[in-house]
Image (cartoon, rainbow, N blue to C red; front, side):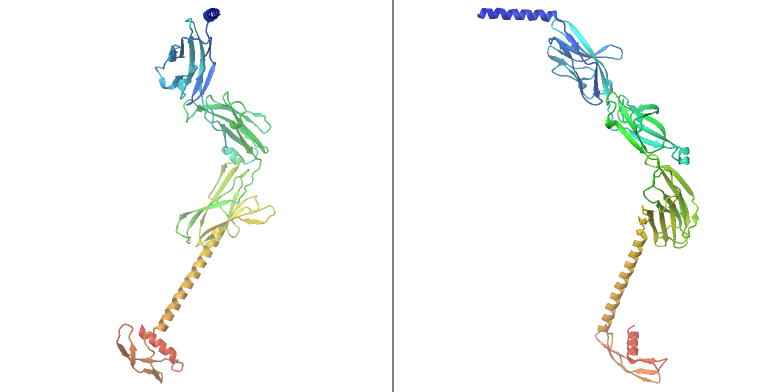
Length: 457
């Protein structure tokens, strides 16, 4: 029985050897391998039958020849001569490319030598890619004609710019109904952050006829066609009204000091909120008379399709006054500027839906006045306390006792008496006379206190 089993085993080995010789090796690799720039990727090499004597990975050079990348012969791995740090051979004979660079792109070949010394090979195109990290950005511009027209029919230039990518992305525009919008031919330029990447821009000219939404979509073989992460939208409105009253800033031209003096020359700049169409700003004095502006300008706002208006006046301070910057056509939207020697106060007003005024500021001048009153009251209190303390001290510690005197025909003679000296331990004897200009009204107590004060001085 044992002899029969040995014969059967030998027969099976013989049959296996025959089939190994009869079946040549077949090698397959993917047509394309995409590896992120700076990342790591693998190219599998599959072959059948799974018996080999050697595996060689090579790459085509610029001249069409082959460069040795890495190989395994008899179980021993031999690395690349031109870039050994970037390549590795896995246990299942896949080529691993690490720290992918642009120079690593190209056509790679896997060649397998079987046990019958027959070989077969297959090639794979390796491509380095850069996937956009952020969605496209939409910006807008408006020429001089657009700003001067101001109306809803003015043409806006909308530009969509992709993030850096490799291969370059394609940008498409659609409206809120999904209808494509014809764009100026796209432009592609080299990226600035990653070598080999590209930035794509697409511009459309659009007229705002109603409130709508536009979309810019980035597409490529890598990121797909409708990726939500690569889509940006912009809201367009036929009419935009500022939410806040105009703001006012002040700069001093000459005669500038801490406060405002007569003759101080000021530049006052009034700036509107974002609006469509642009609003007109008017300056008025305290009598309601218009003030001529020295300059005015209209610039595009941060919101697509909106404008910001500025109006500048020069004013020479003469006396306390009030100036007003009014947004024309917008009832209740105004900013009041109060000028006085103590400083500048502003108060912004706008009307709400029921027409009542809403005060948005104006606390600067009120706070200054309150602080000034508080300081004055404090000074008065401190002075009063000081006077009371000094008066009490003088009453408790007189310099000397009031002398006795007689009054005769307007002439008072004070008898000499000893008086305590405040600086020495000795007594002083003082004699003096007082001549009255009005002898008919003389109070002895008042006179004695007055004379005593005179002596003390």
